[in-house]
Length: 151
Length: 151
DNA sequence: ATATATGCAAAACTTTTGCATACAA
DNA sequence: TTGTATGCAAAAGTTTTGCATATAT
Image (spheres, rainbow over the protein chains, first blue to last red):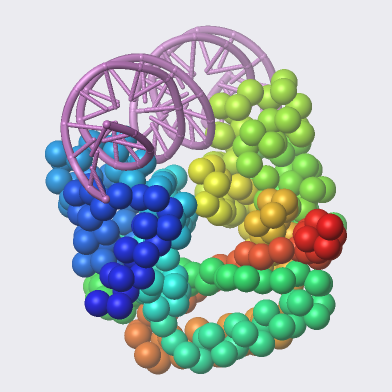
């Protein structure tokens, strides 16, 4: 896969060896497709990789531009593939069930591109990346709430 | 001021008394106009209010919908006035100097409103609020970098 | 062979909590 | 007066670090 080659390349140029821990972490993040916290990785990847190693692994991978660190207001960080490796996307955070779902919509990006231009013209700020998250109720929680309320 | 009345109202309906600590925290957050961390508040508000009290104060104010908790990927939380109390805005985060500047642009909101509609139509997710932050280089850091590079 | 990565234990940092005292209403 | 807020100290949760050992290249 092309993406895997690019990951290899970034690991190499950051002088990071291909180890079992890193491979496991990346495999799980690629497979799950949602931003994961280190404790979650600890559970998924297997307890045989200690937390301290996981923290070092994700930190190194962030430095190598393979992972990206995210924080919602949860009190801990989550990690996902760097945006060059995954399709650029945003997040739908359900405040009822806590789920975080990726969202990619061409129409959004077009509008944001205009916005970045507006900002540069207005303030002189050169936006290189952005982060756009939506908070609300996912379809299934909306249904659940409707059912409860109907009672 | 109208906003202060609204804050009073929210404190009252959350059964929160008007104390010196809360008043100080709110005064500083209103005055500074940038999202502040608790350690920053500790320094600004005065060391005579201990950290534990500050954490309790901001937590209570978040529950009362007077403050809003934000997290960039810094490892700690920042607090600013709830969006109903401040003009709805976004953030320009300079990755060179770390400054966080508020930005409010009508054109952005119009585009986001369309986006929220798109999302509801596409996914069924009902977005109640959103968060949009831009990361890049502020005008003065861009100038500084240009100067350095020119040498 | 050699530099890098890991595991363990200990520590640092942010945030939370229990409880007695102080304060706002 | 009465319930709420604070200060202090201790603890909990997340993340970082030192150092000896194990591993990738």
